[in-house]
Image 1 (tube, one colour):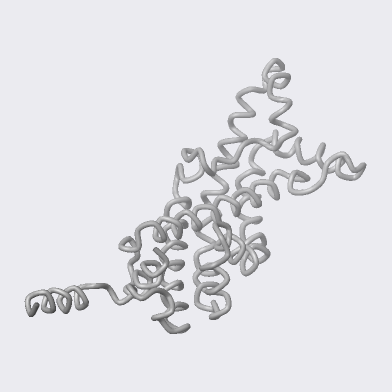
Image 2 (image 1 turned 180 degrees about the horizontal axis):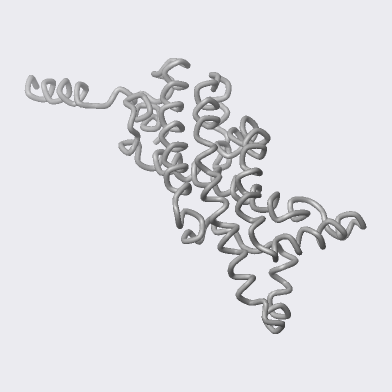
Length: 226
């Protein structure tokens, strides 16, 4: 009996602090743990996407041509514009890769400003909760930061300029709307989508394996969710 009690005591000591679930953690601990995980995820996403090939070589986030151009591909290829299309698609993805580092400061600030209520909403809000949080806090500001970088890249190609002229006329008549009214806005929107998707994937990986978290409180919080 004494031996059994010793074993139980040793197991109790060996169990992680989060074995009791989220209820065993304070709101402050939970928020701090989530901040650690999202800071880690945001920095990893920027590092992963903000380099050569970050978008172009990643099927999950690679930016295709705007729908109108994608549909016109066969005709334009027959007209000898196939290489121009390839150059534009490459330039679009390179533009996204060049713009992503601009996001780091704003993403980190969004994490720092996270409230206890924000943390609860993310932890219980489903698979898209991280994306929704970062979009609500950073999308408008990041659009403003990304656009000049993207524009500097895509303006070098004549096909991008031609598309913008046609898109401008189409949007004026209501035939085209949304992000596809210009190459720059289209690329910026898709780049942000890819960024938020990648951050969410980083967070999801920590949910599945809390030991991947860099911070001790992040390990506790996500361990409590298992």
